[in-house]
Length: 387
Image 1 (cartoon, rainbow, N blue to C red):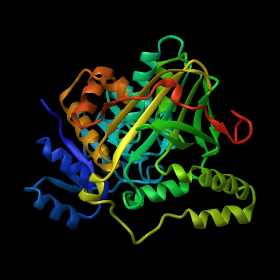
Image 2 (image 1 turned 30 degrees about the vertical axis):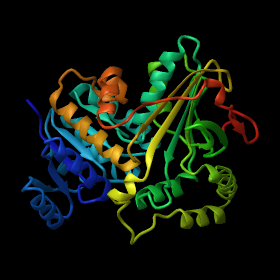
Image 3 (image 1 turned 180 degrees about the vertical axis):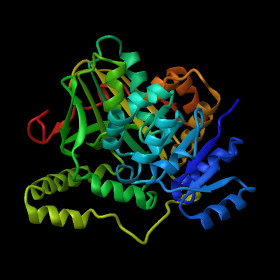
Image 4 (image 1 turned 60 degrees about the horizontal axis):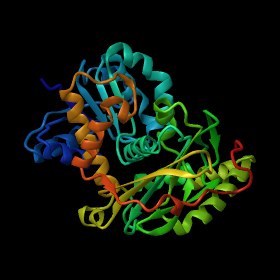
């Protein structure tokens, strides 16, 4: 017996892609959001779906949307500003939860705020269940298992094949701009520390070419140490624009310096304020021009010898996110043996089920270069200092 599925954000770019992916799977979610007119129009275009007006900031309103065993999906961000009531409502009533966030700080806060309550009510909560950061979690699990007991460090790199110059949504651009001024969680010395974005550069080999990526973060730093307590270091890097990695490093350093002064903080606030008046993202033709490529390297020590390397390749950022959320929603609605709490994708579904699910949506292993093709990180200053 399947539970009811509710989708918040279907009138937005990512939410629309998620809706399309769900409909292709035969799922008919109830659409929810603030604009009743837009919801009614969208629901009618898709064969008369159920729809309900709901405010993402109203916890009492949100608790009425779902009941125990239902699935609540949200693509409404920025999540640190708009996401907590939605997640809390799911945890309180025992509904399962999926979101599309790429904000690691939000996921970290959910662990603190909602994990225990979700365990009590049986709610399975899957934050960041899309391109951010299911592929890296899967690739890292496979790499650590291949590398064996000697693995102590994992480096994950996110890349794209094909140009992303016109292939990013406005929401992604806004998140990226503001993210350069925020500290990123990094797992080192068996604990989470905060580091400056792009304070580290790492070279990976992608399709036979060396590509540079800069340090960001991902939920890998939260979930992998739980699965593999022997890990000393977990690092996540972004290599969408390899040629810009060094300039981004310089911009991040300048932003960190400016943030120490009142005028600099005010200026940074203006520069990183979300852009208004622009919505949407790449269309189907543009998405078809790019593919996702994720690398995980397992080593015997931070900056040490690589022991295993896993490459995954799949559809574009947004297509992959939509398909993963649709797959996850169906799984949550039809299975009753899953681990409750704020959990990672492997903890929720198991490695084999996740691997098969990712293959189903087009994310599969591809040939990896020899481990010695992966070069060690290039640090800016001292290696693992808190910045």
